[in-house]
Each structure stands twice: as C-alpha cells, then as structure tokens.
Image (cartoon, rainbow, N blue to C red):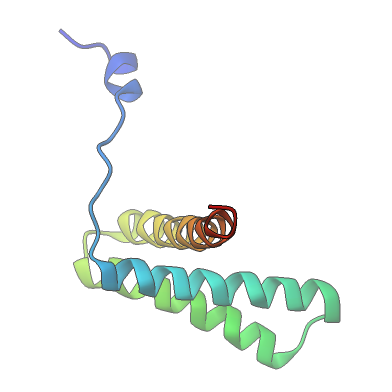
Length: 101
C-alpha cells in the first residue's frame, strides 16, 4: 500500500502538447518577459502593462477552456508560462549551438 509521501513523490509524466500550443505559449512568455524587462528598465507605462496583461490572458485561454476549476486554471496558466519560457530558452540555445557545429 502506498503512503501519502510515496504518492506525492511520484513524478508526473510529461504532457505532450501540440506544436501550435507550444508556439502560442512561447509567444506569450516572450511578450511577458519583454514587458517585464521594459518595465524594469524604463519604468511603468500603459503599453507595457497592457502587453503584460495580454500575455498572461493569452496563456490562460487554453486552461480556461478546459474549465476544470479555479486551481486547475491557475496551475495551467503558470505551467503554460513556464513551458513558453523553456521553449524560448531551448530555441536560443539551439541557435547558439548551431553556430558552433
């Protein structure tokens, strides 16, 4: 019989997402990162705050459509943003790696 600790330590399998969804998440994450950098460098502005809100809303669209509950929407949005950041970093590192091979 499994204890709660053993069940909690089991890793979830990686979710396979479509290419469109990965591209959309990476676009939202890139917009979010760009807006955050702009706000840190230039200060708050209406355009930067609107871009940040649009990027978060865009990442939240797909989890909201599944309508599984508030907690699932929040975790799905955070997961989408993290997946997008990972896709952006993966693209940058593959571009740099292709320069040296």
